Length: 111
Picture 1 (cartoon, rainbow, N blue to C red):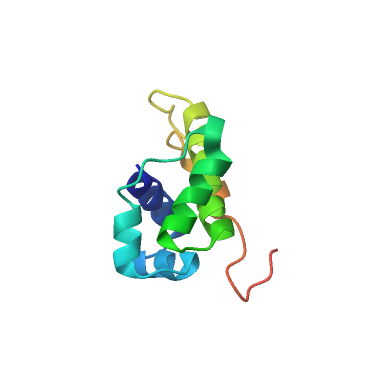
Picture 2: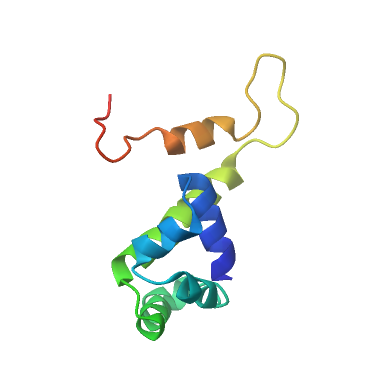
């Protein structure tokens, strides 16, 4: 469901629902209705994401970026080691979350 995608995106990016709605160019109500849609399948991704963007009158490119970013997060999380970390090692998946957030915010320069 798109609602799951939106929640994962919001958590990974530290954004509120209002921020996401603004990013997609829609109202809070439209975001909630769009959240009930099925997530586009990979075999017909372009057709399905275009249909969602058209139906809810949201910007296509930001919607695709949200979906693709969540796909990357899920792929990296799937590769994270499973099990209890050894003493002195970070918790599984921690480095992925840190790396995913290691980018400049608006108005900052990357170091």
